[in-house]
Length: 215
Image (cartoon, rainbow, N blue to C red; front, top):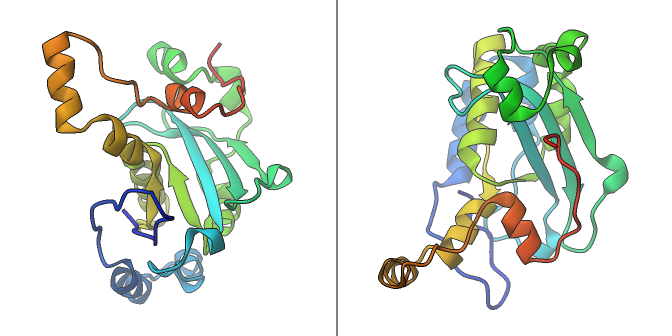
């Protein structure tokens, strides 16, 4: 996880990898021009104040939870800063998985056979997707979905994977609502822990309601 300078009162998250060093190594190893361009855009320095950072929220719909077996069927992103959300620059793509959809996966992500029948393969839109992420800090809710699925999908299509720093809002929520003391009292009092699912987290912070893919 990327560590940026927190605003006053925000928690200091556990230190992550040295992304500057790792980024340079990845840039040197990259052979695919599209990925070299992505790394050439650079990353935000860890000491950068959050007020100066360009973010992009990234959300995927997939056919399951295992990037080694399942595939991406939808990509959505919205750029923002701490002071503004750039709704007009938001983008969304439906992409065709390389394996046919099955009934279980349709129930899981809500995207049907007709939705993907004329959709492009991820490779056709990959340049536009990566251009939207270049030089920004990607914000996700559970990085093992968004980052791992993108890495696996690109590796399957281009022969090289992609790695980039993210801010994981699930990890931040976990820091607040999954402390050992909270888990202890939850067991003692037999009360459920506060939900840190995305929909519940959005509701907790009075974020606007939106209709997702699933009914």
